[in-house]
Image 1 (cartoon, rainbow, N blue to C red):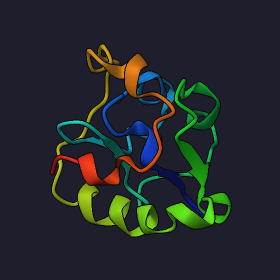
Image 2 (image 1 turned 180 degrees about the horizontal axis):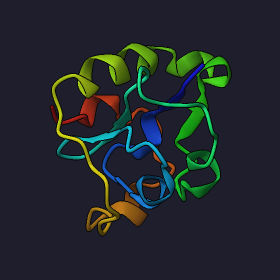
Image 3 (image 1 turned 90 degrees about the vertical axis):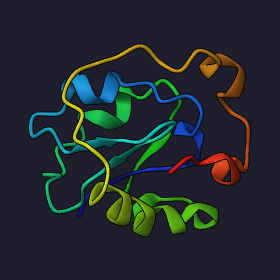
Image 4 (image 1 turned 30 degrees about the horizontal axis):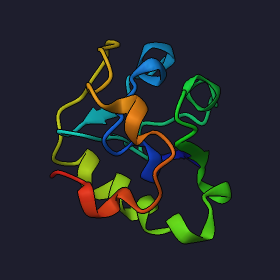
Amino acid sequence: MTFVVTDNCIKCKYTDCVEVCPVDCFYEGPNFLVIHPDECIDCALCEPECPAVAIFSEDEVPSEMQEFIQLNVDLAEIWPNITEKKDPLPDAAEFDGVKGKIKDLAR
């Protein structure tokens, strides 16, 4: 099992999760993070660290966000690895909790 980054990370990109990851399985795009499922060890340290509540265990991803499971797989293969905490995006607080942000995903 792996963890999956979902919709609410888009346009927020808090990186508190990256800081606690013992295996550096996060990958960074312009306005979103993903978890590489083959690298995640299912330790669950990232989930409570996400201020945007955007990380779920794969078997607990809400039904309306199931597409994010494959999206994490695909984007982790092409985006660079991120291993250190960075500042969130400038408008993160404004976009935290906004629904349906997949249309805003920058690849």
